[in-house]
Amino acid sequence: MSGATNQLISITPDELKFQLSLGFPVLVELEKQSYCDLKVTNSTEHYVAFKVKTTSPKKYFVRPNTGIVHPRDSCFIRVTLQAQKEYPPDMQCKDKFLLQSTIVNNDADELPPDTFNKDSGRNVEECKLRVVYISPHSSPGHSEDAFKQSSDVNSSQAVQRARDERDAIFRQTQQLQQELEMLKRRRNRRSDAGFSLKFALLVGLIGLMVGFLFKLLMSSPSTE
Image 1: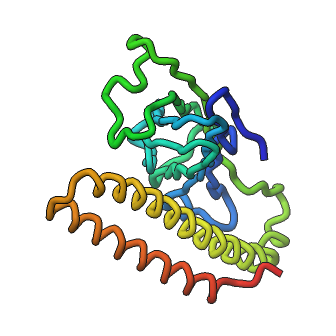
Image 2 (image 1 turned 45 degrees about the vertical axis):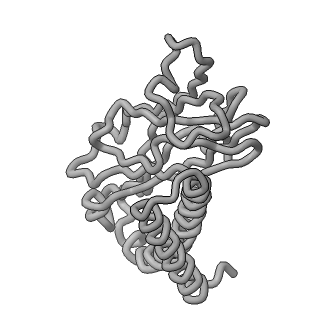
């Protein structure tokens, strides 16, 4: 799988692909959300902050859209395409994403407003990512064969969907653990009641996610 690379970070994959169904046998995928996960890897010995921008902010939900990656570490960004009511002409998408990155201090709890402002004198690097819509290919005149194969296709899609959900939960758990580590650092500096309650709620949420992930792993289809 290819990726985009600059001096501070590398991004995999180098384009966002969203699966859409077109034509026989399923049409309802238009009504559903689709997502793509990006892996951001810090290839330096510094703490690197990132920010995600898009030309169509109303169509996509990005979590997290900003963050800090530790030296020689990585994190995942989930980009969700909101449910669409119609396809673009010829399945061509003109949407673009921009991921900015810059070196920050390792003790930064919150990013200053001018973190990604080039006019402030910071060295801000940028990676551009394009969006690609993918649809199953079907040849005209083969609808009967497609119908016979549809049950096998649906079964394979169900298995793949279960795997994707399992992997997504695992990545979300990793993200929550990263947020927990950040909260631990903040707790060492300030220990008020409201912050302690937030910390306890996050710990409980991580526990639920880990339990659900374990249950899903036990019940997911075998990869053999």
